[in-house]
Length: 393
Image (spheres, helix red, strand yellow):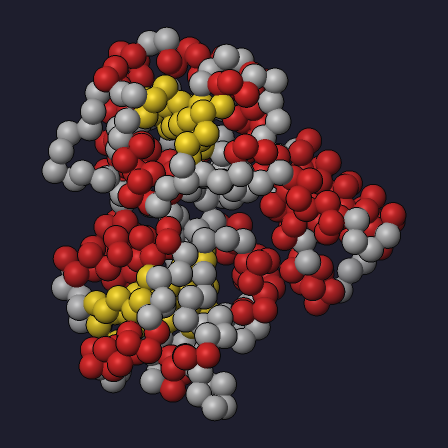
């Protein structure tokens, strides 16, 4: 049975995910070591006592441990994982376009794991030399596994949104950085995505480039994709802000847990209840007291987000936009509520209808709990990873 290395001490949410997977892997028979990236020298010394040659693997998120950290490099810039022949299984929770600079220099025996099937297709197209898969959607955590969830009728918050907000205008400096022609080109892509929110950034970018240039070499297209992350951020925050805006301006109080919400412009700010930013456990505690948990997908058009399964496992009704993958597993009105980004004006109506009937909400919450419990916990994802690392010889 492989011994496993995980990281904490950098991005809090990803460290939390790592701890959930580590405990699930322990239940499957693996030993694990938690490397604290905030205390690298101490952790390195302890890791070498844990390490077993030929029988140790790394499971990480978003290139932690292989993004140029000096304490993992020798004088020849060889990573510790290459020197020790440790295979790595990197769960990348953002679009690959954010990580071209890392993907171009991954260590040997690197496995790229995507949380969205479109991300998988992108990797096959632009990085075919990298071992890719399997698809592994994000999962959820039940905060109190041995306790029953609080009934919907007894919960404190009608509607919550867990996550940060950033004004789309923050990205104007990238849109206007070159000249008027490029500015118009970027705005054309943004408008296309806002009008057709089922499209991916890469398909819109390619269509607009081909309309301008007729033909774009694959390597040039690959370079362009890496320079368009601000488009992704612009549209995701536009819709995240608008979802909350639609609700609060319709008279619904929304409790937001995250940074940046004081910058959201709305007609009825008295309904925007700005709370503290929280760590992962703090967010789960609030979901335990939430009736309706709002989710806006971060432009994953064929994947899921942990907010969905966290909401379900902790007894809230998840109100979310959908994706190709979510259409395969979710059932509107049975285990969740679904709204459309193309019809955001209907969101308050959907929310009010749900909130008006506690009995129906309880049925949906119970359905969501059973769905997530049956197939969308980190223990389920650990089962996939277990098979993957044990196949490696």
